[in-house]
Image (cartoon, rainbow, N blue to C red):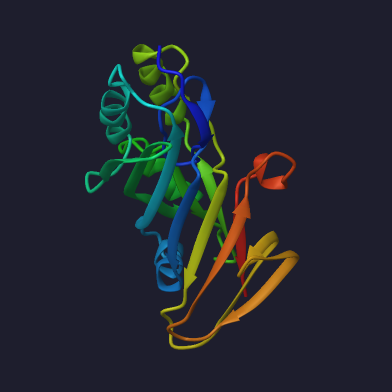
Length: 219
């Protein structure tokens, strides 16, 4: 049996180890114009990059098998790469997650296999990360390879990069986040046109985002 010590694995996405683990980092790019488009009733696929690091080797070749299962629950444009570092394996997933109002997203998920998405509220004032029910189905398939394999979310670290491509500044806010490695119980930041800000949400044990999904607000 492969004996991985997991350093961390996802809310959108999975890696392979003995037992549940979470993604080391997930980076989600959200454009302000896409939020408006979602508010207008469209479903927008936003780019996501997830990185998983696992200590140890994979002599039974479980990682490639699990990768094929994971790709079934991602967008068709998903790219998965596996590399090896001195201490173990690294799995990098570049994919897309749907962003829409809750009604539109629920409808979209009835015909598209996704493990997560982003919900825009009815006024376009809040964007919230949402785990989809398909995670349970994917975990069942992973367990068919090894009964201990499964996806646990949220990620160790989720970075939401808010990119302002509108013609005027926008203000973004969030609770209990890091900006440029500085912790803020509440952060509110104005983003000039063609600029961006990274909101970092830690999902480690003891953090509120080990229990809650990342979200942010717009003024």
